[in-house]
Length: 171
Image 1 (cartoon, rainbow, N blue to C red):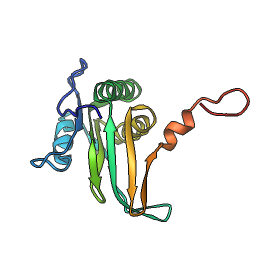
Image 2: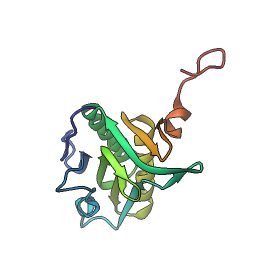
Image 3: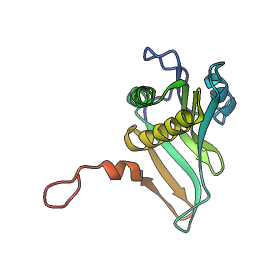
Image 4: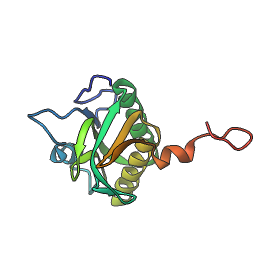
């Protein structure tokens, strides 16, 4: 697993905050207030958020925890590109994205997206776009740990984009 980092990733956009976070004893959870406060802007009439949490069951199996790994430099660059695409498509004031690495227990947040805009539609649509794109294209890998085993997960968003090989197979 790549060494986790945290903090603002500067890709020439002072209105975007990207955190890829390895929880530590002093900060065991994502600080959701930090990200909402970051996107708060006097020009914004709306702030939309998405919080992805660890659920306790999946397809009838009891989930104990999720474990995330990432290639952090590439993940940060990819998230920055997703945020730039959101800015190109919607009129946004600010965007914040945070993703945890390591173990995330049931009920805790693993990913958080916040977007602010003058009007709610832009913030809400951009927020959904950002989380869908992160799940489809960012090199962050999730292992779901059950009471009776574990499995690396592929996001449906990724699978939906997977190219097919002539003859019906997939890559």
